[in-house]
Image (cartoon, rainbow, N blue to C red):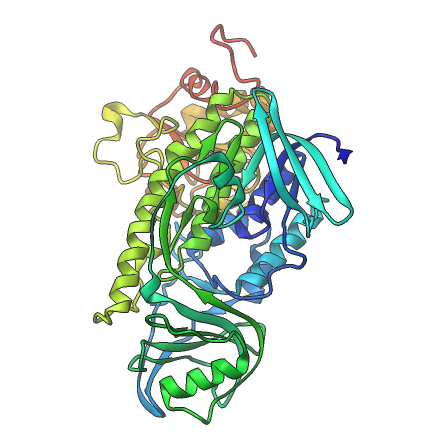
Length: 523
């Protein structure tokens, strides 16, 4: 047995959740290791839809351009009865970008490819996934977590400040903690899922047989490949071999189509929909995220995306605490994310049953699945210091921070998302009265908090001011006069004040930022 050097964070599980967290921590300079018990990287699609809010996260992490180049819009669905075309429809209505939502549409991209791009980004930070490395035990005390890892050649003892279980629905970490995982497995709604080549079908559509015996059969083309994701329901106790030959026979029997030839399956799996969530997300220095904390039916494209949001919420909090912020900040991970998972679980269960019951419009998706409306209103981290607490304002602390097109003082285009990008807090200072506030905050907090003045055309603009030429920033944040808006590193509004003072800001930042002002007003 080898005793390893300590790392700050050990991440167990290298799916989208674990990789997102590793990328976020690595860019903060947090020492982390990410392990996965499988001997090779996952090669299947499984999750395949990246929601608009997830695209914003990937923008912040610096991987969006690669993701957009690899993915594609969802194709229209063509419904058949055997070989007879019943009609075409779209699952996701295409929307045009708006000033506050630059990426309004879901992107189709197989999970294996999304993971590949996240791994490439992580490698740019000098971190690589350790495959064939299994967590077989751990113990914790007030100072850290000691984990035992098994790999070919022996075992290793590793000391970490924190351990994150992102190891899936059958999470070893969750079970070792004794955390409950309440809910149900929908055995009656089993399905065969996999990635195959399919001769005889075009790749411009998502092909669906809604009247197939046993339930709807579907083949969805995966961008950047010559494969389709296939899904075939398996009602009752029906058994099936996980071979492409068996899938071909099943497909023909269900659809009556012998002219479509399936071959070369890269991944086949028996899928059982689960509706479950953990009753706790934190036990001491160990946290649960992604499928280890909640598992969803595939309908609605929420599971993968919710896991990425877990990681995005947890990453900045771990980074702040490891840099010296109060450790109690980590309690807000469960406070904020557990209610979100509960709501998303209810949505996906509803959509799943609507689809299983073939209700009209069951396959159409609207704004409820985009995750742009996820909010942490009411969180202990959401403070409103406007007169009357914001009253009937459309945007409140806890909400997603809107984007807006602006200009720099030379007239070049710059967006609020450009200002947010990175591991820092961003202070938006609206109104000429806050010119001194911007200079004070930037001098006192350095890289931890970056303040930007938001000025109207014609008002004095400093070097890093944002000129709200079209009024979109004020409109997006529902600001009329002087105001201060603090945007968290995860792109949610943490604090709003009108007109706001530096002292109020200092009070809010004290439990969030290492080295923030003491009560006496000293750095």
